[in-house]
Image 1 (cartoon, rainbow, N blue to C red):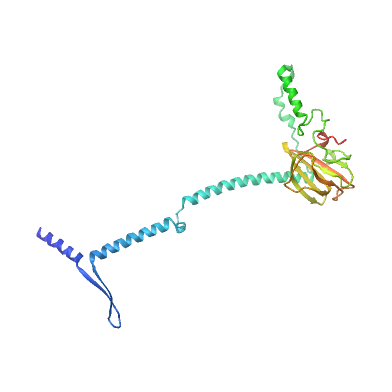
Image 2 (spheres, rainbow, N blue to C red):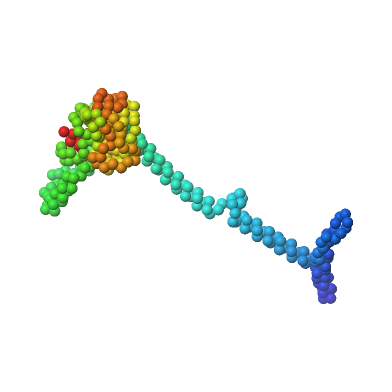
Length: 289
């Protein structure tokens, strides 16, 4: 026990024994600074310095951009940004594909091209046809009232085609005489209306201008997009009154009759109607007489 007690006292004495650290001038041996230290003080000071150094390094890495340079380290913010960019990229790809399809339709309208589609749409629904003889078609009172209401609404609906195709359902774009009818066999997907030069060309319905430029073959061209997938095309104009992106009301002047472009023989309006990417006969929608 005495030996253990002496050993502890010896260790305590060594730890608490005072040492003097002196800094001298090498030339004159003049004492500049001196410190009184013990082994315990040096140990505690060194330990505290290491702890503070580790803490500062941890804070520096955790709360500064330096952490991004550590291999294998990935912050939550970066992961969130990467996820958001992935979703945005997918959305942009879908928008780009839709826009490309839309532009392809506009180019097809400008060129007057029609895709050769041999599919008979009526045959697709043949299997769902019902034999009228098996159905009681006698109208009831409520059905007659509903038919009268629908007929009254359709009377003023510009986008609803009439049953017999004789009534006008769109405004006439210009006053004049039809010089050439719609003839898909000759790939003339329009109605040519001869009119006086500089006569006003009007919008057939409310819509948005999606093209308003000069083309070599058809001169000044303006294209409008309407509801229900309907597109109206006005070619060989003498001048254009609307720009791309303008919102136009039915009957508003959008151009003037001219004789511009290589594919024209006199002042007239080359007017086309396209429904969901396919050309239709404008005379089925408009009374040009």
